[in-house]
Image (cartoon, rainbow, N blue to C red; front, side):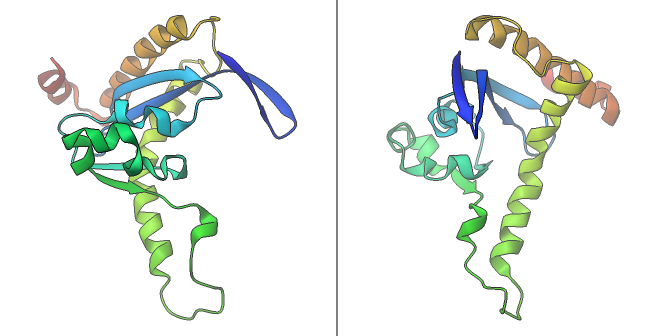
Length: 169
């Protein structure tokens, strides 16, 4: 646990990094770090053995250049589709044609938005928006249970009770 400053306000806590299945939206992996650790440090821990492509926000830019990714043959063969920062869009406002960069980034974002839905369930439905304990290990154990419960909630809302039990158990 660590305190960080965002703007002029100080925060104390931790970050939860999640690996989410792009097809179903279920969380398969979570890791927890102190608040001052960058997102890209945990990127290799979120990729499964059967993943062929990985989507991420601009916090994961340059992940394919990391030593953990380059040394592992599977992780280096994964297609990393990382969204650019908005300032990296190359077209100007005077351009009259189709802005393909913006369209491509929108497609990446539409797939990546499935990651945020389990966080909504954990924070709003289970009221776990803040850390309860002082250590990362205790909080991480709590979030394992909360994200597993969020997977069940999403499954029940989608009406996939039998399919979920067959694939997960």
